[in-house]
Length: 107
Image 1 (cartoon, rainbow, N blue to C red):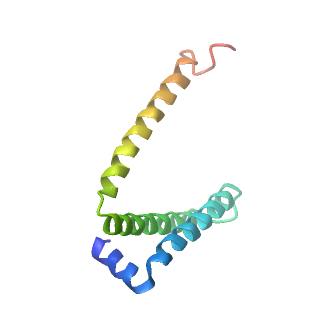
Image 2: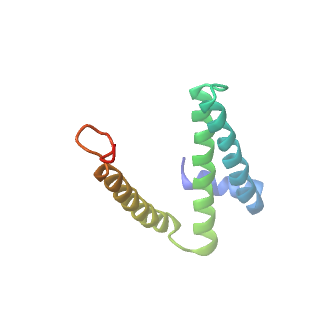
Image 3: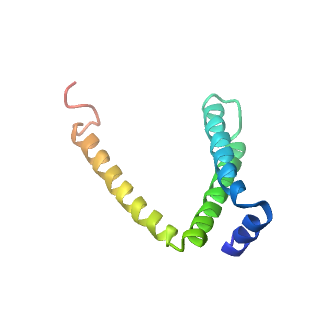
C-alpha cells in the first residue's frame, strides 16, 4: 500500500483514529495469537490479524513522518538492526550452552 493511501486514510478518519486503530489492532492480534495457540482459530484468521497490525503500524509511520518531518521509517530500520543484533547475541549465548547433541552442557 502506498503512503498516499495512508495519507488519505489519515485525512478521512482523523489523526486520533491512527493511534486508536493501532491499539485496537494490536489488542486483536494479542487475542488471536492466544486463540491460535489454543486451537480456537485458524492460521488464515491469525494472518488476517497480522496484516491488520502491519497496515496500521505502517499508517502510524506515515502519520509520524508527516507530522514530525522526521525519517521515522529510517529510525525504525536502525532500531530493528540493533534489536536483531541483540537477538543474534542471545541465540549465540543459548547455543554456547549446548553440546553437539543439542542438549545442555549441564545435563
